[in-house]
Length: 291
Ligand SMILES: NC(=O)C1=CN([C@@H]2O[C@H](COP(=O)(O)OP(=O)(O)OC[C@H]3O[C@@H](n4cnc5c(N)ncnc54)[C@H](OP(=O)(O)O)[C@@H]3O)[C@@H](O)[C@H]2O)C=CC1
Ligand SMILES: O=C(O)C1=N[C@H](C(=O)O)C[C@H](O)C1
Image (cartoon, rainbow, N blue to C red):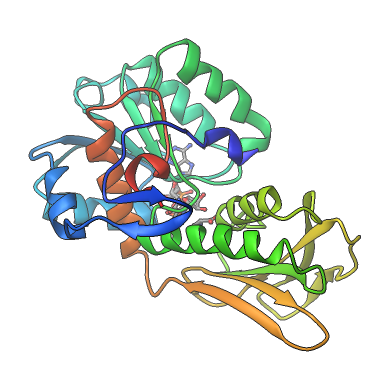
């Protein structure tokens, strides 16, 4: 359960929560981000693919130093002096490799920020235990972008309203590039869990249809009334589109977040690293942005 990572009561900045309404404090987002800007941090990268490269660029622009880059070919470097000197390691690899990377970084005494998706069903409980009982630090989010943090708040707010209108059924769709290994996306699962929490008539999410890069559709549109269906589409180089659709006989209401590129994910991950350098335990986007 990704809800497992929600962390109530942590220190907040940027947004505040009053009477379930979204409120932005008077200080501008730029000023608040600057307030958390730690200069000259030593960052290790674990995974040097699409996200690893984008994070490197943004970390350097923000004045940090990349002290170690671990990819699939040099995993022995977890024991190196350079890796151990990192204030934080930023991990973006695969659903299969993320957990082992956390263990290796923890063993080296390095805090981790990770955006890898798809590993929680198998290892979520143990990772929570390692952070809560053994003093390790992991900041994890299925999506590091500010836009998705805002979208998540709108999703929760809309779900509370729609809870009172059973004439509307609800389903979700996520669209991603053809290289993506997991479906549904981690972001879709987080949005679905939030929605289920707020709306009485749905109690679990299920995989719906899967549209492959060649247009072949598998899976099913059929689901029980208590199930929230998530359809997945793999197409071209789409960075990530998430939609929540409420549909009645009379009309439909759709909310969509459409990432134009990976910059928002990468900036959020570097901000999370700046935060993580001075904080401990299991950290989430709720620690950066609160609505
Ligand atoms: N939370 C968020 O905001 C976001 C999360 N993601 C998630 O991040 C993950 C990575 O995404 P992305 O960068 O696009 O994927 P890529 O496939 O582009 O990059 C993954 C990299 O990890 C490397 N790798 C594979 N196994 C290991 C290992 N055991 N140790 C170290 N490196 C390894 C791969 O090497 P090789 O290519 O040689 O196999 C590759 O270079 C995915 O799970 C994705 O869902 C993505 C975007 C945003
Ligand atoms: O694999 C990706 O690319 C992405 N993965 C994350 C997810 O699974 O939600 C975040 C973003 O949508 C891009």
